[in-house]
Every structure is written in structure tokens, then in C-alpha cells.
Amino acid sequence: MDPVQLHLTAALDALDPAFVDEEPFTAGGCTYCYGEENFAELSGPPHLVSEDMLSAVAFEVVDHWHDFPRLYRRLTPRILRAVVTGRLHVDPNVIASRLLRAAWTTWPPAQADALRAFWPTWWRATLHTHPDDVPATVREILSLITVATGTLRPWLDIWTSTWTASADAHLAEFVDDVLCESEITDLAMGFYDEYHATAELLPWLLTDIRDRIAEPRLDDPDYLDFLLTEALATPPGTP
Image (tube, rainbow, N blue to C red; front, side, top):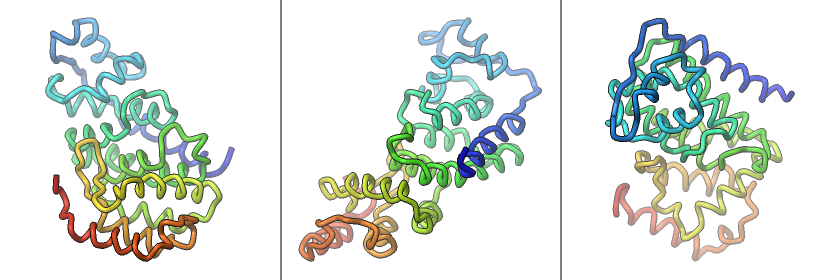
């Protein structure tokens, strides 16, 4: 196995012992949507929770659950492993939004530190894997990590320093995506558009990695002028 993939496997495996919860937990929530058997399942060992219930917790709005932060925290290793392996069939962007609502940075140090170690490991593994073999798009993964951590630049810097064919394949796909309908001029990341990325992303695209992109649109001075003008004219959060 590739060393980068080995590191990802190790980072995922490290989440399990960090998130061991020895205190009893009783799940509860919306009885219109879920029955007692669902709450009993969620109250039991996290590794026995079905994939259907895991997806429900991953995607469901937070007010459907009693003590949502504790519930989500217990299932975070399962949720992240399912995202990485393509077995969680929900929008990856919602994971970051739910982690923020669960206030993951305030969790016990061992758990928060395990997540902080996981983010760059997952990102590097993504860039070292061809797009055809990644269950989510590079844009979805970048968005998830950016929103969860509240920062974009470190992940762009890792991309800049990763000179692999797979990283460049991701880059070509990403650039084509964000240039579609000039979305990059007002690009927000996250399920609820929590992070406005244009101010960091556009200069990075036009300078740091420009020579790695075979993109005719970026050779057109008029188009470049349009991008820069639109980006300056559209304040973050403008409808």
C-alpha cells in the first residue's frame, strides 16, 4: 500500500481509541421520525449502529436529536470512515456543518487532536489518489476540511507543494468546476455557505498553480479582467 494511504489508514484507526466513550449514553429525539428501536440502537455501541442510522445522524438537522453534540461525537469515527470509503451517501459538505454545530474543537483534547491530525492526512491522501478512485470530488473534500477547520490557505499550500499526476488531475477538474459560470468570483464553501473562498482561491489559482493548469480561458486577458472585476464587485455573502 502507498505510504500516504497507510498514513490515512493509521489516522482513521487512531480515531477509534480516541473516541471511546465509557459513560452510559441514552439517545433520544424526534419520535415522529424515529422509533424507540432507533434510539436504542444509537444508545448502544457505536460500531453496531447500522449504516442507515449512521447516515440519518450524519445528515439530519440537529434539533431532531436530544444532546446532539454527544451523539455526533460518539459516531464521528464511523461517519468519517464512511465518508472516506464512499459508504456514507450524504452530501460531504453537511459533515463539516454538523461538526461545527457539535463544537468539535471543544471536545476532549484526545478527540480534537485526533481530528486535527486526520484533516491533513486525508487531504494529502486525496491529492495522491487519482480522481477516479476518490469517492468524493476534490472540491467536496476541500470544502469539508476548510469549513470544519475554518481555514483554507493551509490546504491550498499542501496542494501547491504536491507535485503528482493525481494532484494535477484533481487540479484540472477543480479549476474547470470553479470556472464554470465564473463561480470562482463568488465562491462559498460548506452546506450553508459558511466559508467564502474567493479572496484566497482566485489569487492562488492565478499565481501559485497557474503554470500547472492547461486552461485556455486563463490565457484570455479580457476573461481575466472580468474575473478580477467581478470578484472585487461581489462582497462575500451577496445574494
